Structure formats: C-alpha cells, structure tokens
Length: 172
Ligand code: NI
Image (cartoon, rainbow, N blue to C red; front, side, top):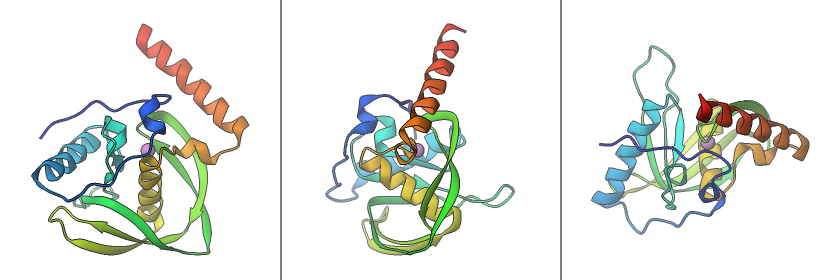
C-alpha cells in the first residue's frame, strides 16, 4: 500500500473526465487500496482517482462515525441509476480544495451501480452523508468540483482564499 500525493485545485487534471475501468483486476484493486490509505492519511471521507492524478473511474469512501469501526467502500465505474426528487443542502469540503467549505444542494438519496473490488457488479442505496459523499466523488470523475455547484461569485471568493492559503503555505 502507498500514500499518494493529492492534487490541489486549480490543477488541470481535476477538470478532466475519467475513463471507465475495463475490469477490476489486481492493478485496479491495488489502486483502490492505495486510494483508501491516502484518504485515511489525509483524514478525508472520500477520494476519487483523478485527485491522485489517475484518470480512471474509481472512488473510495468511508463515512463511519468517530469511535465506530471503519466502513471502507471501493467503487469502480460508479453510476447513479436513481436519485430522489427531494434535495437537501449539506456543507461540503474536498481534499483538493483544502480548508474551504460551502453548502451544496443535491438529491437526498441515490441508488448507485458499480463494480466492487472482486469485479462483481453491485448496487447500493445511500442517503445522508453517504449519498452526499458518493455524489461528490462521482462529480470528480466528470471533472466537477463541489465549488462548481456554487454561484460564480462564491466560487471565485473561495478559490481566491485557497490560492492565498496555498501561497502562504509555500512560503512558510
Ligand atoms: Ni472532493
């Protein structure tokens, strides 16, 4: 397993669309494990392959509560096959947009079809934090960041704050 560097916006790879994986073989299974380790190390609840510079449709999530056991999920080619009409706002952040948070409104519940680490096709239903997280990660596979759901004014403000923070980090 390996901890990989996470790309930070406005890195151009984060704006690109990722390609489906043909099958979950040993290489993709290893990618999933590395992504999960990278996500835990960064204390995130989700990570998409483009965030580590790999343009393949693979995401990992774990939304377990503090003090609970880990609940790692590894999804290849995740696809939303149903979404609730009901929308809810939720505060989101992103490892590629560090320390910036904003409310994004999305469907409250989704059903997702995906390929698991054993190369089996599966479906899951999610609501609450898991639904938010899976939708956020699938967005990454399409080159979309949570800030892209905000008004241009809000997005620019947030990205300027990020740039300022990254500059001061680099000069520290
Ligand atoms: Ni993200």
